[in-house]
Length: 513
Image (cartoon, rainbow, N blue to C red):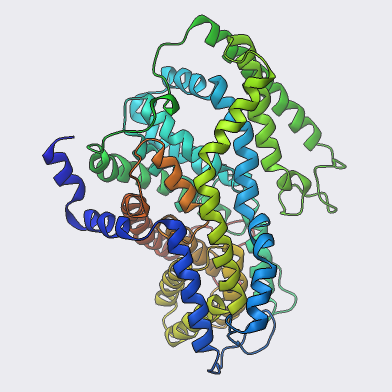
């Protein structure tokens, strides 16, 4: 890399963010330090009383001191459980077992090279972002599937892989609430919104797809904006960063061989047959994939709870078929080698996840996150006489709280009982309030190391650039976050001003006009 490239990559505001971020302790030790901060803050703030009332319990907020003997022994008792039951850990590991076989056999890289043959190079960026957005329909699948493939696609096309990872991450996480395909998040947020609205009007009902038209239009916005940011800001900045990852782990760029074409053909046939069989079993009203009410898109539906297992099979079986036909897998031992290699790559991630799980537990048990959210909501009440400014305030508060409390349902469970009835009393519908929340919740997902999948994305980047740290990823994603937050908020205000439909059964005003 030339001296000029080094200078360009480390100058300016983003360069400062990268340098400062990379000087932070290793992510594992960072969370050890944050755990200590939570303990100390919980001890200090436990001596104060607060007037904030938790809308979920109706009781006054009390900060629980995590340094008492009882709290500390409870922490040690739950140490293993916190880690083992921490959601992202099982999701990532199980999915990576199947993906590892597909990678080891060459199925994934061969499929991507075949895709590059039929996709114009200039369309790769929007394609990656769009796939990331659509992946929301499969809950967290995008984090373990789309983001690493974004790097592979860009590398195979002769572009910088970090830019591909950034584009995919922007689509998967930054565009979390931009989707034209209904996802499990829709009924989850709708239920919380309806619960908040019923505090003011017990009989009110909120449609599950009350933001569908807005999120559909938002997907076009995020794809276009993400495309511009990737090609004009992020990729030029990282283009001078040398790729120094292990050569054996990087995708090969040679032309497709006859045996690879045969293997790919049979693997895709098996994959399509598997998907067809799945769809056929989803259609009947009495399908075992449906929940007790016959729905497929709820979190309790077996199909939604089986997404990770289905991803495992979706890549394991075609990966084995490809390896058998192409001759890259000689026996069952090679299948296990592929799984083992994928677990070797996850070792660092597991160490980080152990400490994140303990931090998340203590942060939740202390009630510090609840206090933070309620204090911010109280501050916004001063804007009651300026509805448009209040909508912007909700977006900004949500984006800020999201830096500390990653769960979309957790935040909205706290904020919906406050914001929804408050804005209803000002003539603003629950549908518009929920749309404002979704914009803020999505925009800052990609810049906080406290988001459980953030360290995983760092690991993906280290596959290509070994020196990638928290600062590197934060500097790459900050342009997406700031532009998404600004442009998406303006887009919502324009959408509101014009009066375009938000979704099915939705309105802008309360009562509906």
